Length: 330
Image (tube, rainbow, N blue to C red; front, side, top):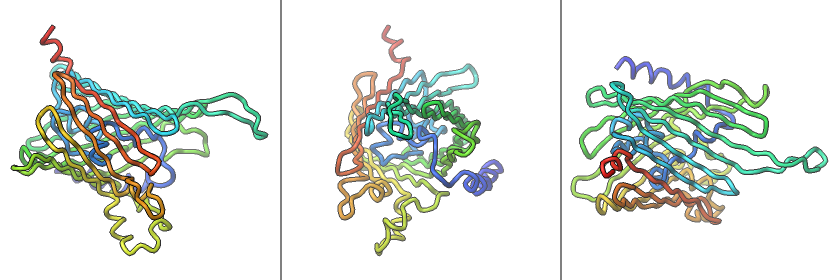
């Protein structure tokens, strides 16, 4: 309890020091897997052996066993490409660890001088390398991710060292609660002396529950708990429900329809995404997510689709397997 008390005392200090300005290191902010994407973009309370969830909450590693391998592909807009990968492994008596990579490639850009003359092309990219570990304390599980975030634009580079601290409490086999203090850390270097990207510190709280006689598992997640309203006043001006919007935009909701252990359907909603990307008078489906899970023998396949705008959305393709299962058949 003393440890938890110290953490909660540090929240205001960390949020004051790291919130504000334009956040950098965008690989820290991307949705890392198709499951989380389909549930609204954020989930910190799913602890059922899925290694992809360690990106969201390191405490979920307590449910992961064996040598799990996970990859996720996300062709984004305008030539941008996102890749995520993770692997779990045992280290003797120390237990299970996980290592992961989040990568964003922004493609090629044309370089020009002040007069508009072409000087060739340059590239921009962000990536984050993470290593995580969890530890059980009675009914609680605590976990931590140590992360190195790097961002580069042509010859300009910036690096930060960060940590996530998360917890999971299982009320019973059908109900769990999770909390994460994410992206606490320091910048090791900046692009220039005048440009120092902010670290996107956040506190995320969520719960996952399945009613006893329903084939649906619900996930509700609150985020941006230490950030000010991120929807501009101009976007909310004249709305009678502006105050309600400021609350709902911090909540993502999703559900998994459990048809059987090898096939599931998923759906989610993110109100903040809808408010940010809706047209003036039309929502155009922004903020809605859907997906499916299909397990064939030893490989779990997930696909999800996120609607961003009337112009379209983006897809997430994830694969997960346990390499120990393959050894059993060799």
